[in-house]
Amino acid sequence: MPRTKLDKKKPTTRESREIMTLYEFMSYIRVGYPTAIKLLTTEIPCRHLNREWRVRKKDVDDWLSRRPESNKEEPSC
Image (cartoon, rainbow, N blue to C red; front, top):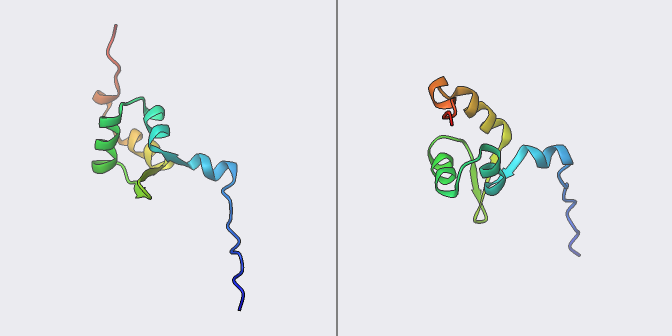
């Protein structure tokens, strides 16, 4: 019996924007590599697939909205 190609659904533009890579995540919340890894391993739900991190934008937004107000303030220059 011959093998058939599986129909792989390619993500739509909207779907692909909802899942971020590590570097997209770092850029989105403006942190460096060590901080991003610490957050992904301790505070933000994510997946480590094929040696790459994946995080849902919704989870990041939820985490940002839960942060205490004192941590949200940016230092004054």
